[in-house]
Amino acid sequence: MRTKSLKKNRINVVTLGCSKNVYDSEVLMGQLKASGKDVVHEEEGNIVVINTCGFINNAKEESVNTILEYMQKKEDGEVDKVFVTGCLSERYKPDLEKEIPNVDQYFGTTELPGLLKALGADYKHELIGERLTTTPKNYAYLKIAEGCDRPCSFCAIPLMRGKHKSTPIEDLVIEAEKLAANGVKELILIAQDLTYYGLDLYKKRNLAELLEALVKVEGIEWIRLHYAFPTGFPMDVLEVMNREPKICNYLDIPLQHISDAILKSMRRGTTKEKTTKLLKDFRAAVPNMTIRTTLIVGYPGETQEDYETLRDWVKEMRFERLGCFTYSHEENTHAYTLEDDVPEEVKQERANEIMEIQSQISWELNQEKIGQEFKVVIDRKEGNYFVGRTEFDSPDVDNEVLIDASTTYLKTGEFATVKVTDAADFDLYAEVV
Image 1 (cartoon, one colour):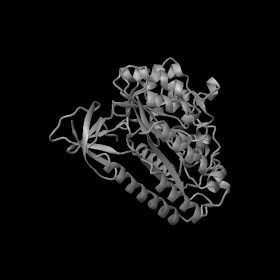
Image 2: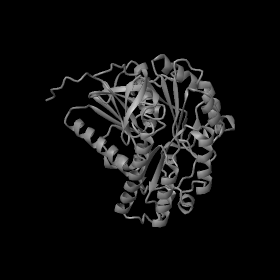
Image 3: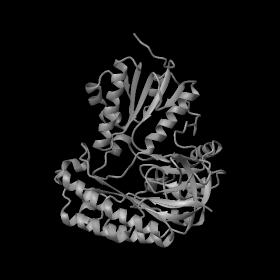
């Protein structure tokens, strides 16, 4: 016998994985709302849509566990229907249908109209930019392209997201205007590869032109660039970054490795020499730029010497922001044909050592900020602190600025000028000027 007071036919969207998935969930929710549906994000609802991630082992495990958790709720009568979409079901649909058959329906990454139909809604083409954002009101992700044409050996993204497909500039401007009208002040540009933007539509790399159009949108104060591929980076972007105050002096550029042998096996299309020169050119063009990168250790065939080359280079380059991951052996990728020969504990030791080095670099760079003033945006209040970010920090992954809430009142979503009074490895402490 059911004893639940759930609102009937409330659709709960659950998002796993990266910011691209957050964006897709927001588009789905916008479409559902436009069809008059009662839709929530990660709250109670009797119909559940799980937007999965299938990138690496940990993410796949989390996705499968989440599906199983909701199937149990369905069995217990707590939810009526469970739909699964996103990268995991794009990549493993036949396996999932066999292993977890009592999911109501599985959808891939390009099957939004079909998913909406299953939820009793219509896909509306005219809803460009109509999203129900799930991020704090002051920032939103703007996905400028889908898919990827790069041949990186370790990466399963092209299997799940298909070929690179840019969104036209005029559509992105409309979307940015709608976000700004809803109070969004910071746009975080995302794609599998920003560097490639425009090649399919305009027959040239057109990221600089897109930025020129977006800076004209009233109400937007910061524009941030995420996930740029190093090979073929359009250098005219740096000129716009330097000239336009709205474009944050920040670039997320995943470099993955630096040993020439590993870069070649990874099919990255570059060398240690070229990558080092590119970073020096970045620094020369935009002197106070913050560079975020991500690295992979334990790739098949990575020798101690390859690893030491990477480790020493991290010490030399002194990245402001850096994340390090252990290699995940993904089926149907080119690297899957290689032997996954670095033991798990060695992978972990290498990743830990790189992150320790980075922690020290970050601490040293943060000490230099003591006494300096910065413009920060306030994301939230947590405990006794207002938590903000400078233009050099992206939400969830980078440093934060902590301001004592007992002495100052600040509004979330607003900007403030602060002076740094103290600094730790990844946090700055500041007071309002």
